Length: 216
Image 1: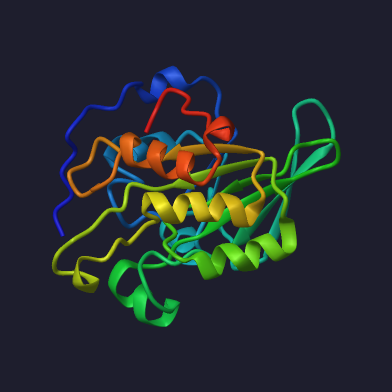
Image 2 (image 1 turned 90 degrees about the vertical axis):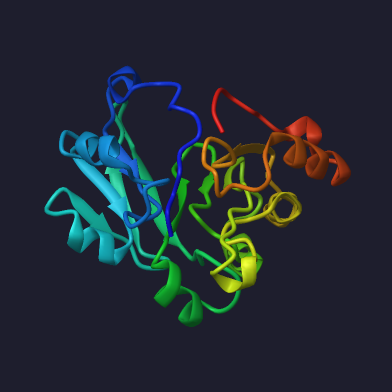
């Protein structure tokens, strides 16, 4: 599969400011970790990712299996707990998807006095979202990877990450108070963008919870 970027990134890595930890859904596709991203990781103290990615990316990377947690110190005192949660990078059961699209992971961030944040990663499975909701819902913020990326030669052209309607359903399952859609523009294989997402969230009665931020 050839991944074609259609729009340059709006911000260079140098403009991100201090980064203490990277949450990396997976390391095997350029729309999640490109050349500049790999260069950035060399200067980051810790990258949390898949178990396989943890082995590939070296000593600064740690892989999290499903429901495995790591506790990190906060700059202002206290800790934040990052839990790896299920994600499936395509339609169907994980054992059929992973040999084609690879291993992915999502994350839930929790801590005393902190909002609960869900980061979906490249997930296409609402069943996985239901499992996560059973443990963590309602969440304060759901960062949902969307865009309905498709390839005709893979899974009959079905989306390998949430489409817009599924993103809205995921937000409902999670009881998300704030929804941040990401991963929906700037690549040729993304087939649904902001217009489709806005329509889906509006139809689900969630438009007032969506925070578009500054990126897709």
